[in-house]
Image 1 (cartoon, rainbow over the protein chains, first blue to last red):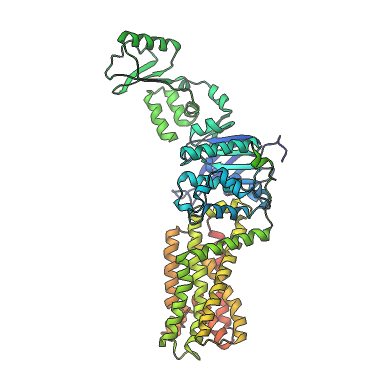
Image 2: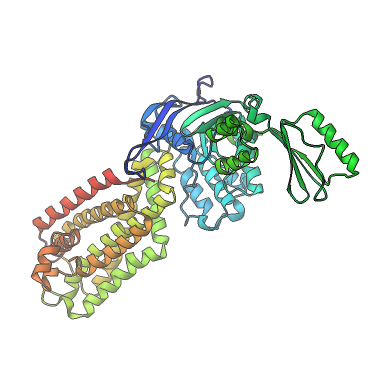
Length: 338
Length: 256
């Protein structure tokens, strides 16, 4: 395998302009203004960002599918803009929309793609491994989203690539497919592959990625291991949420305090939000004891990449700085991440 | 645990020739399995041939009805397969990202196009064999020199129509490609001088359609297979169309 000390993919100061035809207003539009990232062998590198942040454009420039306007890209030591068949054979690509012909049948298609390589992985083994056999005679257009994704993943790794690009790999996956796909991605990583995935799902990044780049409006705005990102501390991230359920219409007096907001979000559902401290749990316990009630459900949300994401992406930054009411954060969440 | 990848050797491309043949075989099989395409590629030309031989439409132009009808029907096959067939298939492949996916494999963009050319030639060969056999059964006896001249002309025609089909498929939505290439097929076939010399009905129409790729190919095929002669002016027009369509397709074809 290639020298594992140098990165498999090295993108520096990437710029991509589109238009004038592609942009709606007929002018050139800069959709990627400054993205830099490195992906190493034996690691999963995630590009995390909202839809339209420039993730797909970035990896399509790295795949040689789009030509960049500026910056440098080194993929396995080569410029992908001038990639030849030998380079393409070392790089696997799973596109966001799959890129599979709807009229084809999965196994026949995989055999065809395998034929483009000198010594591909065994199609039957891969078919069995990803559970494709159970729908091998169904045309692609009749497959579920998860089944299609499994076929697309199989097609992308048939050549046993050193670098694997996965654009939104868990889009439309049912739980069973998700498990299979995630397991295979970890196995590929353990086999020393450099895996670059884009996702707008924070959960994916948290579960799969060794290193995360957060992309917002065409720029990398934060990077680090999941742990490093989680340990970043900002006002927005200290906001935590404790929810519980009990009978409706309870008197919440004695629960709230300055910096901790307490509301009944809908009948019987209560939420404490703010900079939660150990003393707050004690007061909640005392409050329950006083009313003589036992909550039917109690949940303390763990801190997640979502908080980091909101803090560093521009929508979240505005919320954190202006100190808007907490409900604004969920509004931003819905808008920016869903 | 990771036996699947550890023991395998790292990705290397198959040889260029094998990649292109692999793709050509796959594309040809896909074309021939598609029912609608078969209707367009086989049933319509066959019906056209039978209709032209059974009716007096072409009387007075050449030695026999079948001698005049068959060259045009062969030209129609090139139109069906290259223009309408490849146009529609490529338009939808583009919509579904198939072109982009395959261009990231060792096949690449060049291999994709080479595969399409092979698929068109394979399909066209089958059409020619079938149509010629049926025509021969109806008494078609073309001169050998004309056949030798006709084959490269038909290939040139197929190349021209494929470039036009890809130009449309690569620039507009697949639904529009479907409409344009089907409508184009009907217009070229009915009044484009491909199966019927347009001059027979109106000299104004005949003057116009000789400038179309359909009229040029129709005239070329009839001159070759009836008189064993080369219609030089028709060849110039067809070559010009081939050049313009290819350059335009290279320039404007969008892969996504």
